[in-house]
Length: 376
Image (tube, rainbow, N blue to C red):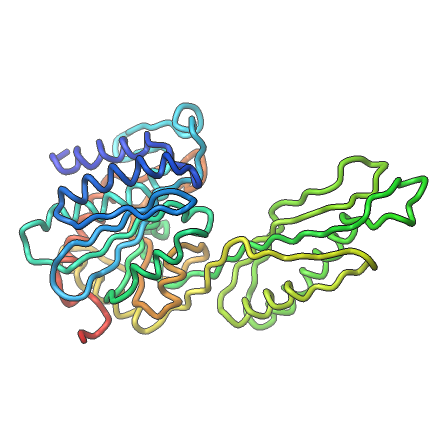
């Protein structure tokens, strides 16, 4: 293992041991401070942006042309203590495991290591944004992402790739909706007619939702998952409140609009019941464009120069590149290393793949022709 690889592995262990679950502002602050120190030493102008969810990092590295935006996140799905008993840190040959190492703290180090290699050499200008709440839909950082996207020539996301290492070009839209029902409590035996069951109403509304999704899926596939249901308290009390959280995935904006419009106009089945829907998080569908394809082709050309074969195709999962791609910015995602077990106790990455991604990003950044957007 060479000096750079050893340093990158040591840094990855350090980041994994800063356990940083979403909405933990103190943990995100520690992540941002460590990353800021590294990027400052690499020659970038660094700032930390804070929201209710925590601290996010922005780093600008001067170079040739409009900046290429590199996008990542510092939060993980793992609670504090996971490294002790759920996802322990380990290195076994080429395999490295630990909380967040694959999704996506290793991707953060791909960006950094490439920038460090290029210091003092001619390279593309770079803007880095590392948000603190991606795993929960980036509810507080989408405005930061939009601001950072201003004037960029393209965007690369550092989420994990397809299992074969292919990059991701296009992602399903992802929306979480809260559905709340208010009814009226009463004794289930002594006064049942005075009650309005919020649970019964919720069940009927979820059946109606299935019909809405099925109708939209005739034009474009829609995935729907009722992830949580809560309500009621006792079997002898007609429940006054019930709620569900619904996850929806869309291939295109037309189906997305149809389903969300229908959800906003749901009507109660029971007289006196009150229904409310709330958009909890929203990532628009990112349909691949010709500009995305041109950026992928340019990355593949850079890869060919160093003996790497680079391909890309759409992905089902959503991320921050949904927003960037939907804005018309030439976008590619999946630039993190190969591995597996995202969001699972088997989370791991390939150390050799991590080195290959650093090599590839270095080749991309030292080639001013890579951005797909024409020079102004």
